[in-house]
Image (cartoon, rainbow, N blue to C red; front, side):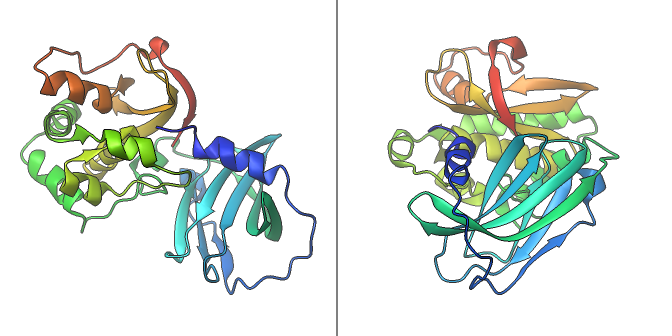
Length: 266
């Protein structure tokens, strides 16, 4: 996977143009009803193909997400924990310059820190009508423990999804996984593997994270998963394990988390 979109966007917002707030955006409102679960929804309409982003700032830290012109709502995970957030909607001006067209302050006190790891969010988007989610239901039918569900979905992915080298060589900044497209193609990059596994696990009630950073044996930016099972977060890498499983090489499902360097999670 190429260098994190978050880092690219962070660089871009550091040179935001100081301009007026008038904008062609028709709607930009925040839905704060899910703040206690660590989620923020934004409703909006992006005019044409104007690049638009949402930036969350707290205590000197930032997280930045794209707002797609093909959607009217996004659910954003509050990655910076409890406290006061400054939320800004940013509209592209030129080059690397963005201007704030809407800014609000919100107070966040998360009651259940694992709740957001069961929800549909940007990068791990899912609903019950998706083929991948229906497949997860079939794979876990009759299973009663989280460990059984983890194993069933893990086995399916590592045995049936192949790594797409051509896609890895051409993927561009701002790419978002589509779990049904990954399932249908039977292939994807690490970002696709991690999004698919997290979405399928969340849909059957098992908290799952997508982590990004650096993994052992991989010299490029990477995505993997962390799954809450039997009270502990376990590190899993379906991308690497698919290569092992498909070459008939034994591999352990749970990894040593200390061997991974995590720079972000969703």
